[in-house]
Length: 169
Image 1 (cartoon, rainbow, N blue to C red):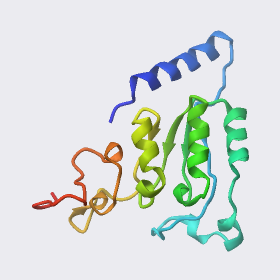
Image 2: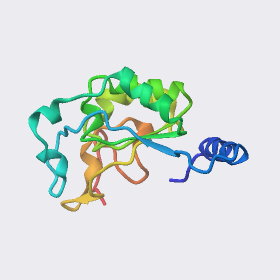
Image 3: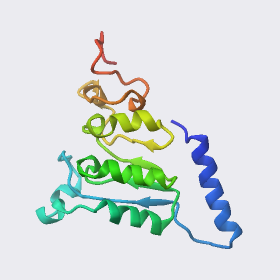
């Protein structure tokens, strides 16, 4: 997947504007972690080892959007834990998009259709990019073949589990 032309343009304009003003150091991406909790327990991930009180903490929508405004970067990456567990994640993403920022939502996609189906369909791919965090193949099948995704979020070559398939490559 390439970088959308509108994103290339806005980021280039941002960088050029900083350079023309003589600003030598500036943020390109804000890493916004609204929570540490996850719905998986992947081997090697240190997030699941945090104390329970830390795993229960959540950044509010206001705190998240204040961080986006304060940073000013044109791109916002939202990792976690699993960001889709956050009860206000849709409002956070909508607020970021309203600020004309690009969102990279790092997720295992298990809750994607439930939380974001209509929003992703309405916004399309240039606004929200979803890099899926798990192996491409698991047990000889695409891991995403078991996840219900909105059509606009389904990567090329990954079958839709709602449709009859002869075989999963």
